[in-house]
Image (tube, rainbow, N blue to C red; front, top):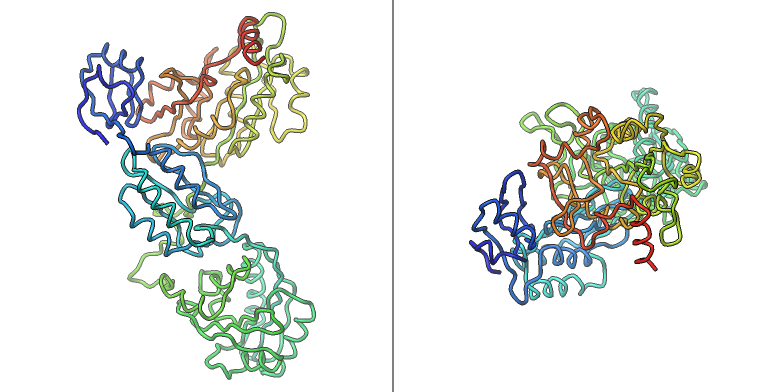
Length: 545
């Protein structure tokens, strides 16, 4: 890789190593300089840039990250598209993260240029949660490094990373009692246990109570097994202190066996794993009566995901198993510094706002959104692209000829909002749509209904670039240096967008937030093509033909 000062006249095709400001325009780090960029920089008096050129055998950061990403996702894991040498991997459903730690370590030891970071093995994850990120550190890595990574990744016959999905398991609960145990404690345990199961897609089949003696525990266990549960949970009136105590003795008397007693996780040390007729039976530690995280949560998660939880798996839980919170240590699991609940990294929740209210004045008498392009109405192309992209919710704003537009919206997963003030300008439609957006989104993609060549891939590339924490809160597509649409806005900009007026969109905000704007160069001109006139429609249809 050639890195260093480059005369502006020789910089076409090179990658900017550092951002350059030229007048009101900022050219961001990593941008591949086009001839038009060179002309603009020269005109602004920029004579030299710090740039990078790849040499033979080197693979650019996005291509390299994407190649590595293909090696990782197993069942329940998806990768987003690359941006700035990074590909993030997300859980497709709730479950338990399963990864090959040994191969992951070998991959990270191959070369400093390629890194892979994941959550802890067997972490519980929610749908959409980020589980791993692949990052190429410099602007490129070598073909040799990639082949070594591919060799390590592909030599075990199993995926490097997967999410074992939570299954609809059914659990029976048995509680043994002593005169000293209050009924309120037993009732509370039922509720806490039911909640624990529900969080993992399982359900409580029923509860039984019996005296804290081996024979009555055995009888209750036989009754519970008659319902054919997927697991039996036994909360004893007193802690299990030995394999011959009342609770394990009851399991053996019911025809079962004790597989393991104790675990290197605190709280949760005194858990007991048994089995009767092939059905797991768990003797709960006393801390399982509390909703706070404990070792039973780790065991239950694996049981609900259909993963093995035998002696070897339990004895390997020691690293990270110190869960007890003591006065000398903080409470990182519960809250953030401001007291709000913490949230795991997740795929950004991006809503789409499709503007379809305009009068099509330049098109003449026809409503351009209803005109056919490649065999279907122009607006249908935009709606299909949005539906296929990583979008969590869609709002479509109608106005002009709403009755004619409405059939195109029928049967789609979207919210249609009518703007009665559409004739007063674009800002009225924008604000009408913004008011209808869900409250929990991270950003909104403002899409125009007259851009039929914009695809789900274009939208996903913008979403992949979106990262407000890294200064990419406003994401704009470009082609050959020209900015186009759609534009992805962080939710933090919604109040400013609501304050707009007249026949303008939100582009006036670009200059105010240039430091938080990211440009994403696209492979084609679709992001520049909007159809406003019969001549442009004829041209597009002619090209399609």
